[in-house]
Amino acid sequence: MSAVARVGEVVGRTLVAGGVDHVFGVVGSGNFHATNAMVAAGARFVAARHEGGAATMADAFARTAGAPAALSVHQGCGLTNALTGIAEAAKSRTPLVVLAPEAVSPTSNFHVDQDAVARAVGAVPVRLTDPASAAQVTAAALATARDERRTVVLNLPLDVQDLEVPDAAPPLPAPPPPARPASDADLERLARALQVARRPVFVAGRGARSAAARDALVALADACGALLATSAVAKGLFARNPWSLDVSGGFSSPLAAELIGEADLVVGWGCALNMWTMRHGRLLGPGAVVAQVDDTPEALGRHRTIDLGVVGDVAATARALARRLEGTPTPGYRGPGLRERLAAGLRWRDVPYTDLSDGERIDPRTLTLALDDLLPAERVLAVDSGNFMGYPSMFLDVPDEQGFCFTQAFQSIGLGLATGIGAALARPDRLPVVALGDGGALMGAAELDTVRRLGLPMVVVVYNDDAYGAEVHHFAGEDHATVTFPPTDIAAIGAGYGFTALTVRSPGDLAPVRDWLDGPRDRPLLIDAKVVADEPAWWLAEAFGH
Image (tube, rainbow, N blue to C red; front, side, top):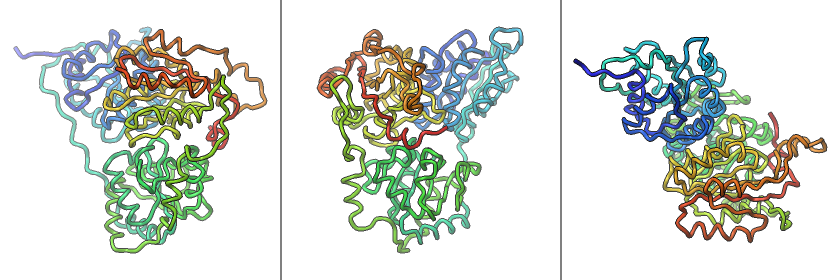
């Protein structure tokens, strides 16, 4: 008699055979067997305290590892609990497979229209209905996630999951398709634009977050004299390059904004060139030519009018352009003295400011600069959303694009801690640093237990102004009773979860951070920083919009 297996077990084994080695989730009755099958096949299961946290952990892991991950949830309410994290992943084109058991009967308490739920947040719904094709459908769902960079909700009806099928070796997903080459006509048009540009700037985005794309873009920029910038999600891609402008957009330093604004050609590489990256268009100087290179045709011109759109893989297109420009002199942007200007004045830490620390509250710039000096350079940084977010994003350096995980496509607060957990698991060789506002910290506080339980040597910094600071400053002069709160001792909350915790009101209060860094780091560290809240962050004052 041939061996048999449950459909749920086949699904789990197929995902692991296809390369998924981490699955995040909260296990209930409907996803018990599929999750255990993944573990038995060699995947690591990471238990979160809430499905929303699990979804964001899986998202951040996949982004940082550069490989698909899986999320496993209970039917109905487990899926809806995870929806904000799934929406963030879908908007960010994260390769993620969501194992979603499904109560088919409309009389079940757990019944919802899971296909409609998935579509509503931009995910791809797939339903497994035939036990005989369970492995093939699962392998195809994984291929969609991997090759199309999509978040796939794999619905597993409960009455199908427990059916038995002949046990067989799981199929592997088809190999990834070759990189899409740009057409000769498009290459020629963009090459001509680069040849005549006197002040070209490259802005690399999510679609350029790879070593291959970085190396190709650097070589092309060297050939045509371009300066190099990134969108926020690709921060660190050009770290330590002397011609890097760091982040383009609301986070740009004054010098970076000046140089991008004077560009006569701006090329977005795998970058949406959206309102944040271009400061609602204000970063584009009058007469600047705007080009965009993306392997997804519908991405071209989606957020703004462009003069030239090229459909093609970023790395392949950049390499092809470099070959076309070989031996052709181009004027470029790298004039005399610019390298020295960038070295001396590009970074936010080089921009003078008035320290607003008063002994009771610390200026967030002073806090973040001190932490940048204290914390090891080899770090992976995750940042939540809020008024505070520009300070850790721009005053804390990162070693490369894998050192920064920015789950902001949905602009939800409360994702930062789970983001840090996923990124930390993808890069265990680096110190995980998580920056939160007090609102986001308290929203995601349940996952402090996950940090402690996993033994992560994490530094959690809470920029605590006892308010939803973005709303306080956006609605200046109005009644803020609905967005301000009595003081909360977040250090005490962290200590209750097993963290080493301290409260910081002045730079001198950071001395225990050095002790923690020099010690065994056997407990995570939480810093409850009481920050000055008198002013809106610069990026918020300049770029707030919906």
